[in-house]
Image 1 (spheres, one colour):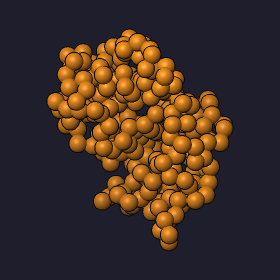
Image 2 (cartoon, one colour):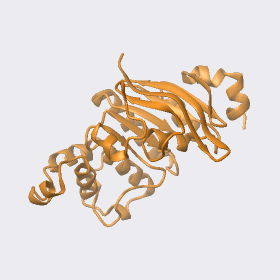
Image 3 (cartoon, one colour):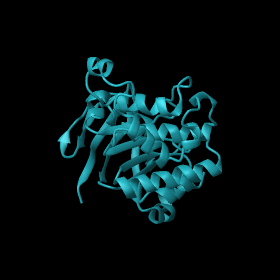
Length: 247
């Protein structure tokens, strides 16, 4: 199996604070990997170091075997890396369809080519496919700002997949979503993984969501990796129970 993402000895220090302290793991093609841990354990800082929003103090990040440490988010985007954020990135005044087209444009050509190209930037068909896949047909022409929070989360996920990325990093996709919408989101992510072969890394506080979605889980505590294993192995690990599951 091919390794898509490798994180080797990653560290990020803020003065005397070691937010990320020597984290290493790999993500295989087609895998859904979860990253969990208590608040303040370094998960978001780790994500931001991987995605070029922060420069690591030490360590390396590799994509398909090539070092990409500190590469700007736009450059990683062009290499097929996409992400969602804890705070929704949808444009409230635009429709669901327009949001998807705009997300797809981020991955396309020059500004001049966009200005001179068709109104939908040639992305209309791709947007319709994503609308269908995430079952948003009845909302396609609705303004994103008028959707429920859970529907906006589905749209946010759909936007991350508009360019057919090979690696998607999802930052707390379950946060604030009700149980019904959560089931829809999980089912669609599973389908995207199975049908499109998309590879995911998921940071999440919702333990049930992670354990039922991910094939492997990385547990962090105080900036370090405490354990890596299958959901069953993680649930049975005494150190994890003590540091996280038991809280």
